[in-house]
Length: 167
Image (cartoon, rainbow, N blue to C red):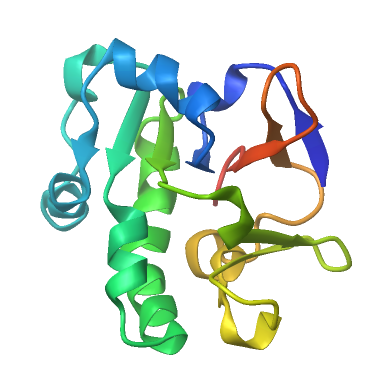
């Protein structure tokens, strides 16, 4: 998986970001859009233009939903049904607008398995008990070229993950 320090992730594709350093400019530029609102767009159609005409739409609330799910299988199914289809539609409707899911973190909840380029979410060290975000949100598109680890400026710390485009 490639590293990205540039800001282009804010203007296209889909990202999950938990780093306060990466999220702060987005939070100070505009209000976060509630997950409920974005899910309504998925079911009723995306608006003609993004909120405030912004090139980045920050969505809050996804991590909370994942944490209240009774188990990883339920969370996986919910993500596939709701978020995967939203990400696909988003990339086709607003190709030059970034969709960013702001997460609370901490970063240790997100684990990249270097062997298969898959991102997992959850507590503990056993990957079998964690949620595979890559397959749930991006249908495996987040492997190889076109997927990036977002590096927090001035550090080597991963602050999020980004996929350029989902088809």
